[in-house]
Amino acid sequence: MATEQLGSPRHLLQYVTGNALKIKKQEIDMETRAFWKVCKKLANEERIDVLRKVMTAFETDGLPVGQIADAVRIGQPATSTYLAQLQNECGLVACARTGRYCLYRAEPDPNDPKMTILFPALKNFFRAEATGHAFFNGTRPAPPRFLSVLPALSNAARVQLLGHIRSELQTNHAKLAKHSGISALNVRRHIACIESCGLVNYDGNDIVWTEPADALSRIFIDLSLS
Image 1 (spheres, rainbow, N blue to C red):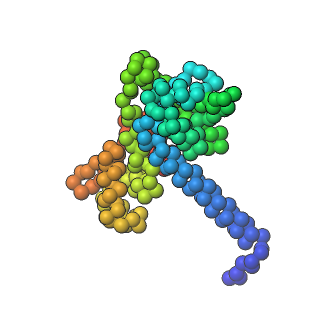
Image 2: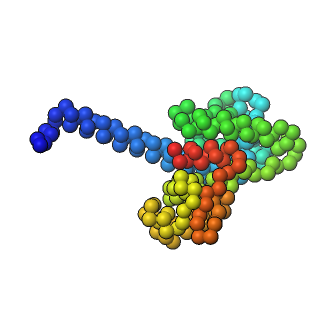
Image 3: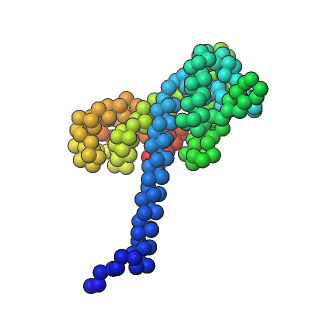
C-alpha cells in the first residue's frame, strides 16, 4: 500500500485537525486549572463573607472597601486583599473608581464561561440565604455547605481521583493508583481529604461516591471536572 506523502491535502488536513484538537484540549485544561484555583480561593470563610456582602448589596453602583469591611467585621487591609483576589483571580467581582473611592460590585468575568455558570448560582444562593438572616440581624450566617467540598476541588490530583470515583461510583485504592498513576501513598492521602469533604465513604475496602445534596456543591464539582 502506498504511503501517504507529506504535504498532501489529506496529510495537511490531518495535521491541522490534530493540532486544533490539541489546542482545544490545552484551552480546556487551562480553564479547568484556573477553576481549581478559584475553588482554592473560595475555600476560605472570610473571603466568602466578603463575596456574600458584595453579592447581596442593594447599592447597584457598588460598595467601598470600608463599608464592606465594617459589614463583615474584617479589617480593611484584609478586605482589600480579598476583594482583589475575587476580582483578579476568581472573576466574580468588578471595581470602578468614583472620585477618591473604588466601588466593588458583583460582576462575572465575561471571558470566563465557567464564571457565567457559577456567578448566578452563587448570587441566587447568597440572596436566598440573606432573606431575614445574615448580617442584617447582626449574626454571622453558618458556613455554606458548598464550602466543605472546595478543598477536594483545589488540587489537580484530587480532582483526577474524584472524577474517576464519580464515574465508577465504587472503586478501591489499588484501582485508583493504577488508573491515575499516582502513588498508593498519595492516593490514600488525597482520598482522606476527599472523605473529609463528605464526597466519598467506605464500604469495606471499597471507596463509594457520595453525591452532595445541595445543588451548588454539585455545580462546583461539575465545573471542576469539565
